[in-house]
Length: 347
Ligand code: PEP
Ligand code: MN
Image (tube, rainbow, N blue to C red; front, side, top):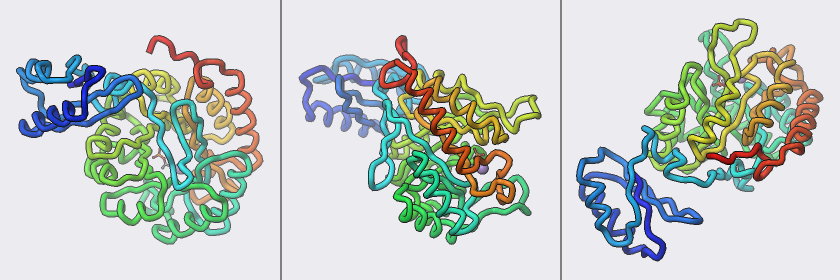
């Protein structure tokens, strides 16, 4: 349920509503927008609540949110969310286009530092790299764990880029959170609700990758878990879904970008590396994702993809990554919608 405050309502009016809700076992999330102040009511809504709230001082309008997710919905918050990453507060969303790039897995200091410097030079904004890797087989390379996080830190210092890295288990959130500027929730963990709760207790931005069989609703509800737990800095990532096609690793669902933009105010990123599984398809799909309005890209890059310990087939060389950046910049320069995005009127 949404409570829209009247213009001229006071902080005291808002406080009184919050108290009314708390006394009834409900929670409220305040969104002080540019145009309006809105309270999202969270919890089990009962029959008379709408009437009760409508009678309270300062209240303009009360309505139910039609979607199962609330805080993540456009109904609750109409303006795009801008998430700020790292100490330099690199923005993503609301017209800020941000590129995350780096190896699938951190393998060595040399590999990670050289990649960080190369992707920074080509225009990337955030360094990616997995230290805890979710692998289909327990016998595959599963990452360097804390040593990998230390290498990421060094690479971040050397390149000036903030870090995104995956956290796989609630018990590792504290450790990974000491190093990461963005906590990545992998596709396989999108519905690990205890993990979502736990990252929601931090103040570190969280990237929620779409599960390989998740609907838009499942996926936005995963973001809602993080937000309901207290962390509003959430980024959504389309990374391809399982379809009947076997040539590609996954099918990058470009529909998701405009669809999710209309449903949610959160920034949305495309991952054409996992979305295709083939390096030669990454640049074309990155261009397409930019053209349909993605707020950013996450791209796997390796100094020598042929010997990568993870996802070499979809990793770009430094040269190919620089070419991708040029192509994506060219596409974005042709876009004339609001804030350099396709026209989003009708949202
Ligand atoms: C990754 O980013 O390397 C990764 C494992 O991605 P996903 O969770 O989307 O498969
Ligand atoms: Mn990978």
